Image (cartoon, rainbow over all chains, first blue to last red; front, side, top):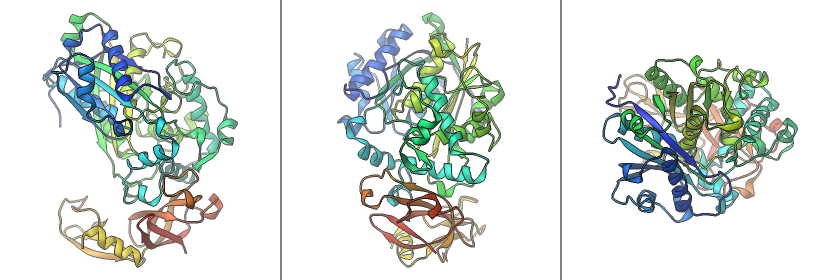
Length: 389
Length: 122
């Protein structure tokens, strides 16, 4: 199905809080990121016609119905807002809905803000809340944690392909190297393969350092029509592809236990819309909630053949400024994973990369960047492709 | 009795209730209401004996609330015999990967309101 878009859509500005354990409230950090995006875009808040908010566990910090609170804080309480929950993929889904509304001509300027505040609840309760994102009857109810579900994919990958736990560890080492160059990253710490291998087992075969941290944080981007962006005069990038997809909610229902169908569906839609293939992508921010996920993602997105993603890691082909830079921001693994914010934060990273604001972690000569963000074990997914102008 | 209650009752007897599409014969777990192949809603009950092999699994040491007393335990995805279907569940007393190689024969044995579908090695 082809869609006729009324407007080209651009990202005009982006802002994020630091990711990590934050002491400010969920509304405060959502506001801080939004203000930062507005300032960065150089717009007046009155230019914003509506907002899209992505968040999963607002209830844990005593605030749901976040949109009107954020709009009130921004002095535009008369503007409509919509809160979106799609587990760890909430941010990219909110972005997609905002994108569709600008593309259709409903609004010429929007703010998309993702936020999460969970670290104060502690590891046991965060683990428990996150398990509610699974197909609970079959998975969470039977004691599956999220590390456990990805560990089940990891076990299947180890069984099916020529891969080792050390290969998985190498993903963590790479992303921590990138995160060291990102001042807003949660875990700014150089680690070794031995550090990963010797860290405590969380859900075999995954160990603590195979897992992204629980993070607090907020990210925000300003989306607008090309006409609005040009008149505004600030740096902007163009959205050239947008795709979404779905998968069986429980792992048990998937044809292959080492493939996430929603990624493949979303990527195909985004590549088709952009009129490009995986080979044209200069760098990608992919959903590496666990080390195994990054390997699976890079295969499902078409960067490597199925079963060969592990070889790419082994040969350093996904490091910063190698064949294809995967997760230059440090990814969920090092930058952190405030689940409602993550998908928006990926767009913020692409904006910074393609407008020359990424500092030491800049992907050289990059023109086209991709974001890939999914909910739960990939039951829902959105992929977006961006181009510098 | 709802379909889910029937699935639970069967699991308590070590069986897996599945639904076979009367239009295209595609087999589903009984919690699916429309055929994922052809979209039709006519199903006939097919009861599997709950036996199978471990398709994949994990051993959980950091558990969600309510599961702390069971660690380490396994979360198992079971490939059911005589079908293309898999079903997931809880398996007690698994400590190290050598306890449960992929391919191990196992069976649905029960349903527990706190641990869901229970799977045991055969």
